[in-house]
Image 1 (cartoon, rainbow, N blue to C red):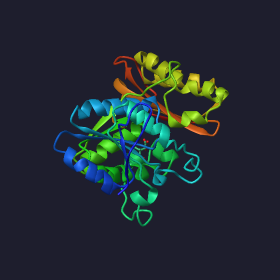
Image 2 (cartoon, protein in one colour):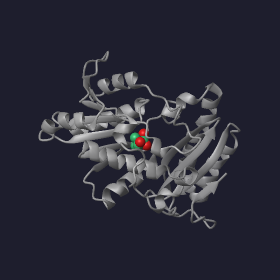
Image 3 (cartoon, rainbow, N blue to C red):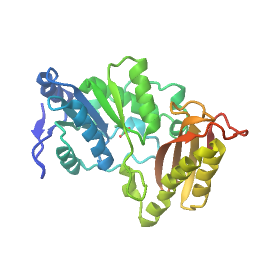
Length: 309
Ligand code: PAF
């Protein structure tokens, strides 16, 4: 068994383990005292992750246990994606965990999670896994759901916390928990933004100063759409596209107006706008809720709600 108590500048809080057996031993006596709350991550932790940990701590209460997993899951990266250059920053991650009341960090090797290589049995995300991010990144959500199911099995949490920014991911994880009766309550935490609107992402560190400026067009487009929502769905889409089209540094992948459950876009009421774009070689996503006016006309409604560049 490999267990160490991580020493950090802010204390000696999280116990660092690299095997599921060590985690199971650690959690065994704690399960009776309160809920086990899991925050699955790929590391490179930022303030958005800190919000997930704070929400986890609150949900766990004084006597529950917060577990963060740090695992860069090869299954969810496609050919030519950034698996090799994905930032690995475990020491800094432990500092963040210590500052946000995390009790244990599981940072397993690929062999620990997938002994014997690629698993034979994987989770099929269904039709929702083939649209939006799934259309641009074939196989991505099968990889995500497979590792999340595996982490649920290894940690056996009562609650798991996900970020709103990965909106399709949290929708699919909720669906998986429901459809497969996994007994895990899924909690979604709002997106943390920089003061200028940029959604926090581990991939923001790939951006140089010019690219970061260009990347602001994503959140600006979503805000413009939210403001225009009172004039209907077409106006919302047009407002977002006008902002994106005006920024040459942004190569739009999709802008999609959908229902909150990712079904067909409504003409009125609550909706959700999702955007994905490449800025330089970095692929970024963002999302915002919006309310469409009940009376505004939308005669040219596209049932897919999707605009592709
Ligand atoms: O959102 C992430 O960081 C990852 O997709 C997750 C949920 C940790 C699975 O690898």
